[in-house]
Length: 363
Image (cartoon, rainbow, N blue to C red; front, top):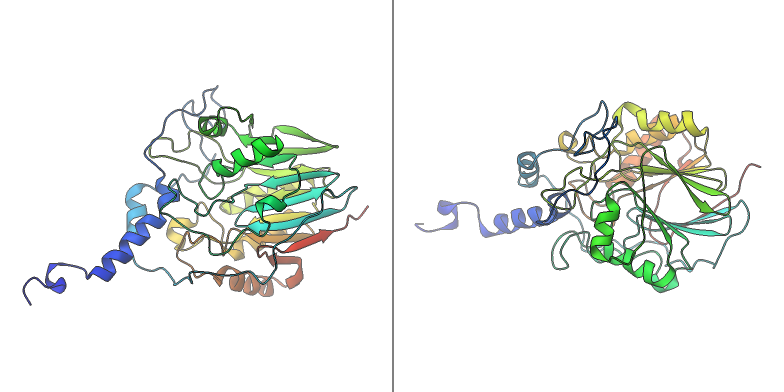
């Protein structure tokens, strides 16, 4: 029929689907701002203008992003993916060498031990996006209500993507608790650009930042990238964190590709066997696009083996729809990867919001 959708192009439903796919790419596209976030001497991972992965791959370009997002290979997600766990109400403090770990969702954990309360990549906003009206929306509420958080002593920010650096949440935490906020080089400009009153401690790979009570945060090299706007790609750094003095040690990987296992070998060589590894297991399809920046569950299991940690929790899945795999597939693929490796299923769990893990030390 003349003038029909079939003649003029894709049907409206497909156009809406493509538009939705592009909106879901907002954490990668960023907003319209950009600029210099860090100025400093050239190093083995900074060329004077941008940071890079030594010996590794850089981020995909916008044409590759468009090819992926318009490819139409995304598995369906439900509007809601509720956790089987009730929201946690953590205690005010956990003393001594025991560690209590509560999963908030995506990459946000509350770590309690040595009398400290530490948050990783805290995101309490409804969307992981530069906009309040578009972009990936939560499929489940935070595993701890913000008002139920105990006083926060330290916040660790791994990099600047919107699903990890949530300036609204950081501002709420700052004005409530005045925590020590530690972030890789350059992200102090982003955070203070939102609220100039916020104090941020910027640090480089291999730097050590005391958190108090004998606990130290060591920034570790992982394989990733960062951006918040079109013009600021890799103008700031990314990292994982090792927490020494918290139980038998904790590694929080932030976001990372497997990178031939090098991030995990480095941590094992520098810190020895740790009590707990927090490792991303989601946002990995399609592999041709995601492999340099996000591990799949099989790679996460191999990273866990290389680390030599006793326990692991998998995160970065089931809360924000960022990539093509279905909502439950990371957990299913993790179960299969553990079976193939011969590891006990209970040593590496796919965390759900509200889930709590109490860890005793070997000492």
